[in-house]
Length: 305
Image (cartoon, rainbow, N blue to C red):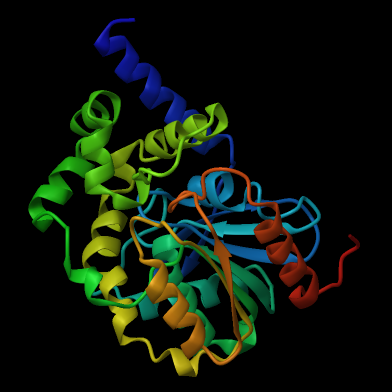
């Protein structure tokens, strides 16, 4: 297949992946919020990571962690896919937008599952609107620390790459190592030998950044505003039960900082994954069992095993 044809094939596949979720929208004081609703049962608000969107929240985060007996509510955060970026946006405003979304769809409270960069606004939601959050699950979480100021390219470079689908596609397709450097969460630790299933997961995560032009505004906000903001959160103010699932060899948010965060949140439990990196490569049945037990305990309606 020629390069031009392959590019258009990948872009069309990305568009179809988004359309297949049949996203909905609500109007909030922070502009339009796009979200996906799937399944029936006790609600779980799913907060996606950087360069994703509601599609990443469904396919990369909730899939494999949340059993089918739960109802997924998966918004795209500010600047991702069909969700607008309000002027002067902050992670606190994003938390308030979650609150507005829940109000608009008539949902009183929910367990919140947040991945990576989504952890900042999820923690703000728990602090600012504790009555909305029955429990908080943080997977490969963005964590406080001095690492927040390291490793990022200049903002104009980051924005230019993620705003241009042809450039982004060329990097993902032919220079995946460069892509892993730009987004450290996609790096595979040297100690991990990916299985065929892992390689498929990595490919899905890499291609999950398409179309980049529908995610660039949100990704820039995450990288340069929302992620560093985690250092401003007073973790002792988080009032809800919290489960933190983190890999020892995560090449992005360091495990030591995740462990420290678990000690600072009053009602928190740390679930350690021995190996697998940020993407949690490999099989981790005991950690998934911990997530399922947490969901059963704190869901709005007790569900059968």
